Length: 124
Image (cartoon, rainbow, N blue to C red; front, side, top):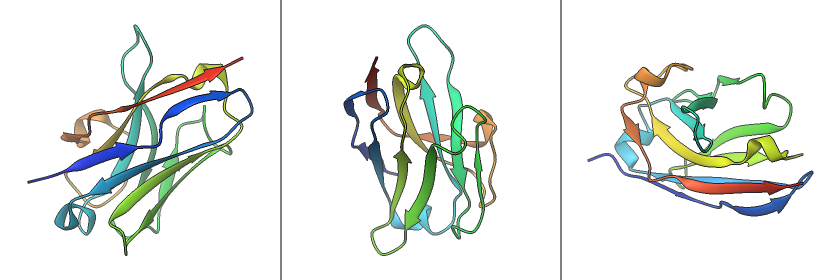
């Protein structure tokens, strides 16, 4: 059974930072690429970042490149999204996702497993 449990969302002022965590079931963590997606109110889900199963390759949406960093800790079976220089347009529910393969992808349909989501609100 695939388990993805997010934490770390909250309210922050523009320019601030947050770190999201996603605890992953061990078998999934050791085999799947992981991704973060977000959904703002009234909008479809949007790709944010992805990292491959080994942690060697990453890819980011243009809107977050240079501000967000995705990384994984094998000792804790946890994937993180470090978000710096946050902007009001980053406000959304953020979802941790696990891919159906080990290589990175920005495509929604490559991620069959989604966590429950965590709210990030950035005030201006």
